[in-house]
Length: 607
Image (cartoon, rainbow, N blue to C red):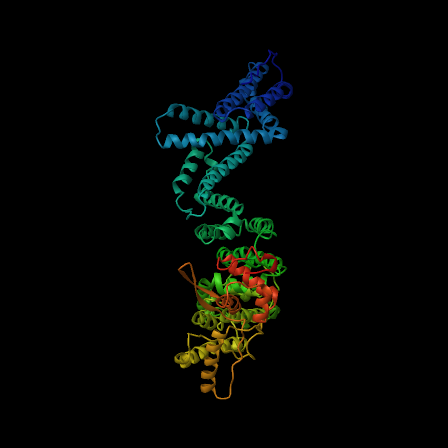
């Protein structure tokens, strides 16, 4: 690289010679050294070691030659002066304003040398002689830099070595994070750690030899930092497939005193706000992300502080959506019902409103188990970011069900909405499942007090009583009828539409009512004509199909058994039904391919 030459100078006293040598370093060597460093930083990696070695040796030779010329004939003084000037050169060239570039350059040389050393240890024959030569050359360079009789810049080399080791560890962690949804083991790196230690000794830095514990901690911190950037996908999108990675992340954070905790929370908060809490994301999708966040963050942070903070952000946003209440109850009792049923059965903690627990002693809050000794044996203090006003027991007992219900703000609102949805399912749904609803209600009673769900119990009892009446009157009916006889005082208000039912259907309903009155004495039935479903067999072109429709749809179609063509006005008058509702039901049958609008009579809305 650079050439650092001297001129002949007559012998003089050491102090004056020292001043001349310092001037030589400052005026002659430093400018050339700056240019050499800038050139080396732009070199390809595989040239850095040889270029750095050549530059360091050239500087040292130039200083040695200058000192010998000045102190010619006085060997002892020359050695002393040489050491002083090399120390001075170390401070001028490798520290001061050049320190940052030098650290980067030396660190790059270390980074290049490690894979070369690994290749030698693996006894890879290809280019092994070249690899060994470069590693030996770097060792010589390091010895010149840290030698107390030479430049003595151990602090610079030490920091460069730390940067290189961090880079090596980070590269190892990065490879493990590529397939982050798979189980990642951090316990199988002993061989790599030993290789880093041996490499450090090989390049002449035995004083900086890192311990296995230090390298393991560095690896875990890199792992935490890298996964923090992907935490949204791990928590919201990929869970529970990412559960293995979450377990490793939890262990790493626990082993390092919560390192990366605030970084993780900041990134997850940012990504949740930017990716999940957007107008274009459906409410059900947000609820799925919310449920994943509850389960995953409980797993990641047993104190549940992170879960509460992230979920509170989602909760505040989703409360503003008009369909949130219905979506939550549908999600709990529909899409996620099997999974939540298991949670309800496993965790028998009573549900309490968070506002009720402000200032309450945690010992008075029901826990998830009856053995307080178990929790005391595993007790850990809350992290610094925990809200001191929030009940610890409430936070740690919260599961997906409790957290979803908490979105309502109170359990009374949840019970009211659940009651209305239960009524809808039991009366309007084509696929009723009273047995499941009964099992689910029993599970809900584990979380609520008995009186809070009393009305729902009466509703299900009505279903059982109705089935009993069905069996009693079955042999009296011209066709099968399964009625839902409700105790209106305990049911939410059910919207009904009055219209004239087909005579054939009314015959069966009248027979059912007479059978009911026979068994129930003075009690009478009032039919809600718009509620429920009717199973029809429709035949078109010798093709039969069974369809389940509302009574209103069945009434509209039944008119076509009297004559083939009807106007909307005629149908509305016959059924005593609003014209708009007649059109709506006709359009449904038209879209199903059963009826069609007549082209000739289109102006009269004929069908």
